[in-house]
Image 1 (cartoon, rainbow, N blue to C red):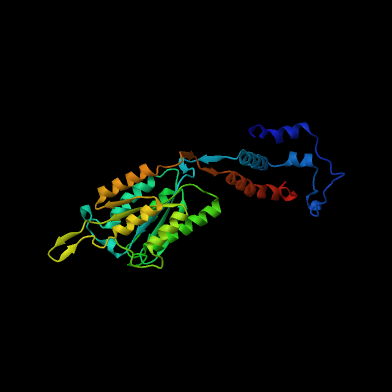
Image 2: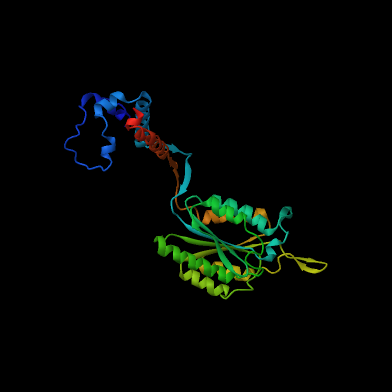
Length: 316
């Protein structure tokens, strides 16, 4: 395209001026522009207008070159496994019985966030559940966004009770909808993390687990919280955790049950899940492109206005 820059100058020297006879296009305003012959108009054209036309032509050629700005390489995920995290945000997740005085949810946010960032090549989604479950992040390869949504989760945002069966039911529904929309039939995994027993919701947890098994959804269950201890005021700690139900859910669906009493345990759990469910697709990279042709094109349009308005006799 740069070779086109001298084209107007070459054509002006090589071709004779256009004749007014035999025009093929009728212009109602042509009479207002018929003051001088084209060759004479060019000879009488002020120098500033010649430079203005040259600048407009230069900008048009630059726009035709299609300049682009290449950004830094970014990782994109080729679709592999579909993995949903269902995180309990009921009131009991505010208990500060984990190492370092952090709440259970804070520890989950940190460790699960690291787990999400390692899932290159997978689609990851997030379900928050308490009395009711809701989809916080749909299945997406944008791992940073899912991790951000997890960090923004708050205690009690979905209610103070625990509906494990409904959370599993929502995961089944979303995975089915995603399969219909995208045609993806790859591995589907649900990691369900809770610190209590199911005491709310319309669907019993074991019934939901059997439906998940029929849908091909494998569930890994994680029980979190400090171990139950006998104290002066009776049993303290995570005495509400229904490990039998969590173990049954994992067994029915072909997954595993894990117990985590502190951050180190939870890190080992997610490390074990990484081994059992490795990322199924290799990481790919892309350089985002910003189109810049609109800038020289728009500037050429603006500069063409005084160039055209100056073509009458008043400018000669």
